Amino acid sequence: MSESFHKTLNNWLKDQFGTGLHARGFAIQNLPEDTKAKALQSLSPQEQTQWQDFSDLHKRREQWLLARLAAKICYTDSLQDQGTRPSLSQIEIIKNQSGKPFLQINKKPLATALSITHTDEYVVAATSQNTNKFGIDLEIKTRPIGDWIGRAFSRKESQMLKDCSPTQLLRCWTAKEAASKAFGTGLHGRWHAWQVAEFDSDQIIIKFEDHEFKVRTLETEAFLFSVCGE
Figure 1: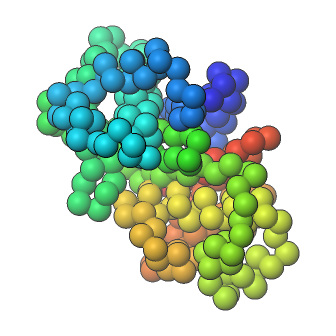
Figure 2: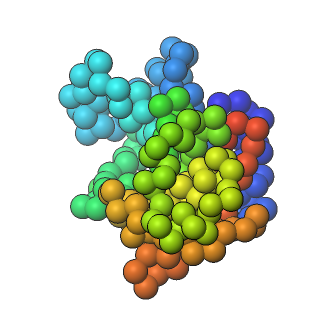
């Protein structure tokens, strides 16, 4: 991912949510050797063991590796005005029982919230010091929507979104993903339980049970990047 994209993304995050949010992404395909080397050096001893347990052909291998590098860079960037920073290998990415990732140092959880998203081609991590209810999702705008997008929405949602373009439907999908990550569970196949309640150019309101989430989306020429930062 280009530096211009990172600049656009982080400026947008600051404009929409204030200071305290940082994001970083990497392209998975044609991964430069120096980037891979840096990512491997960033792993803690426990993460090194996890990395070695991956099959060389495991399709998630590079996603997993680059997600950790991106997340650790985000966290250390957030400390730029706070003096000494930990080394990347001191920081660990752990998941709770629901699968939500969090940061820890010396087995002590950090207050900074973390969310990770990926496509087949890219991985992005973002951290927030503003809230624990924080989730992100990324989609490539050229992703073929096919039949799956129709199954992603309930009958009620489909009626409300019937005049939406493919890009607008993808935006709604990323909003569901971001909201469910902010809640701490992810969608886990419960697509219709997370309902698009309101949709306009500024934000999307997602409802789940008795919870309501506001999601904002950055649209670039190539990407849709949604953030739920309640």
